[in-house]
Image 1 (tube, rainbow, N blue to C red):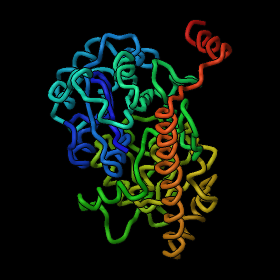
Image 2: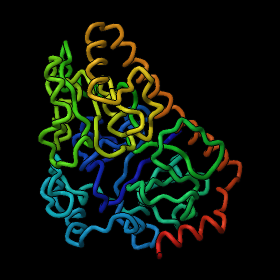
Image 3: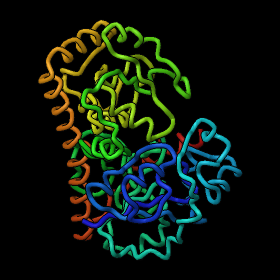
Length: 366
C-alpha cells in the first residue's frame, strides 16, 4: 500500500523537509511533536508540504486554531527556528529551513500514484479529491477538538486521533493516532544518537504533570530521589527530550490533566517503562495492570519491585510494546486497508444523520 502524507505550509507542527528525507532528518525538523513518523520508518510513505489553498475546506483549521496573520506569514516564509509569536515563544524547533523551501502546489502532485493519502487539516482541496476516485482520501484534524462523527469535504475517511484497537470495516471515522510510531522506532533512533546507556536510571515526569512551560520541576515526584532515581523533566528541544526519555528507566505521570496518550506511545517506543493511573490517559489499553499506579506510595512500591528484578522490568516493557504494535500500528493500518477495499468496490462513507448535523451547527454557532 503506497501512502502519501500531506500538510500545509501554514501548519504549526510536524516536519519541515523534503520528500524521502531520512527519518532522523524528519524527526529533527519537526516544529513541535513527533507525529506519524512510523509512516516513514515502517511504511516508507511519501511526504509533501503544499501551499494552503483558498478553498473553504483548506481553511477548516480556523475552527480550532486561528493564528495571528503575522504568524501565518512567518510560517510560510521564515526559517522555523526564527518564528516569533503565539505558541512559538515557548517552542524550540531545531530546523533552520522554511516551509517555502519545500512547499509545492497541490495540483502538481500525481495523487493517482497513491493508494491512500493522509492530509492534516484537509490540506488537499475537494476538487482534487474528486479527480482521483481510486485513491482512499483520509484527513486528520491537527487539533482533536475539531472532530465530528462523520466524514466531510468529499473525503472517504476521517482519522480520529484515538487509540482504541478498533478495526473499521468500511469508510467513515477511523481510529488512527497522531503519534503513529512503532514499538521500537524511537529506541532505534536514540541508539543512532548514542543516547541509550548500558544501565537506564531516572524517572521522567510526563509533561502534563504540571502546567508549567517550559517544565522546571515536578515537586510531587521528588520522593523518587530516595529510591536512587533523579527526576527528569521535559525539554522543549525534541532531540534533547528524546535523550532524556531514552536514558530514563521510568516514565511516570502523577497529577495534572488527563492526556490522550501520545507521550505514552513515545516513551514505550523509546524503551522506557510507563507507570501511571489508567484513568489519567484516554488510551489506557496500552498499559497492562502491572503498570498501574495511583499514588506516590504505589509508585515507590512498583519502582522497588522493578529495580529488584530486571526480568520483571523486561517483561513489562515487552508487554507494553506488544500493545503498541497491536493498537497503534496494526489496527489503524488494517482499518485503512479495509477502507481502500471498500473505496475500490465503489462504496461511499455513510451520510451524517440530521441529528449529527444539528449538533455540529449548535456547537459552532450557539
